[in-house]
Length: 356
Image (cartoon, rainbow, N blue to C red; front, side, top):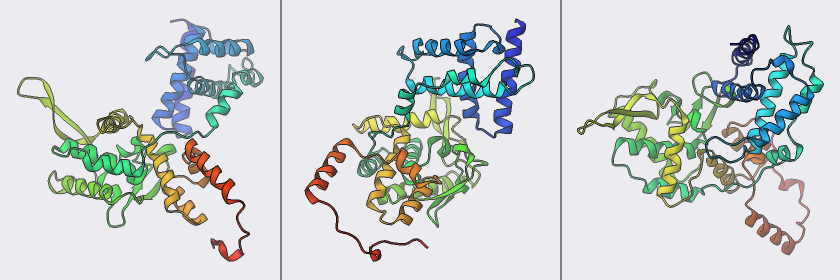
């Protein structure tokens, strides 16, 4: 190992520890930073981080544009390239304050790593994304098989996502004690639940069709009464695997520990929709479904604020900027209606609800 390589490893490790322990970032966020820096290290091919300059920044951007996705062989997406550039920029900005690096790395050179404006603007644009309707979700849940404990767990997991808008990473770390059935809500405690940015908040069940909530309630009753689970046990335990009659590993039921990764949960979600003859929706599209559902229930600014908070957002604009886009066909229909209807009459002050 060369001195340059060992120096790079040492300072990179120091940065990642700082990201986790000083900035309080999640393991997933730290892993994302590490992956981006590793891309940059591979590009350097053993050169010291101190050798950074504007031309190297430009060369790295060209390098990323020519790289392929290892999984499917296609070019790296704009979001992957821009995310890598932002992570490497953050690392170099931190390096520029470290002893031994201050005189070598200038922030004016780091600006050459800025993402391409066109692709970054496209990333920030909120486009409509296909997502299941509330009726589709309910029909799916009602028709899902529920003969085995694993099938009932999978069905309850999907029901939980639609009831709470939870991200799958948070859902798999929820414990039974976090769910309050008396008040129909879930306490997402950022100290023990893998919430985004470690936030703590309470989410009441969204007004999905009745079968969704009943499926979750039945699952919780089964865990407590038949499997003797307590408040500290996972709401969605992982599959217990053992050796079957034919001396092969088979699923034997549920364990008392949670899923270790959200990838298994995401596969279950997508497979359920495919089995129902629907597109393989991502679990994250549930949040688009709930943002769409808001228009059927919200009328006042207070309504929309409560709905947004229930999705874990502090700013109501976050909800509808990220998840509230109108489908293109619906957009055209609405504009045609506006043209046909003409301008609305002026409203009296009494027509508006005031939040005190």
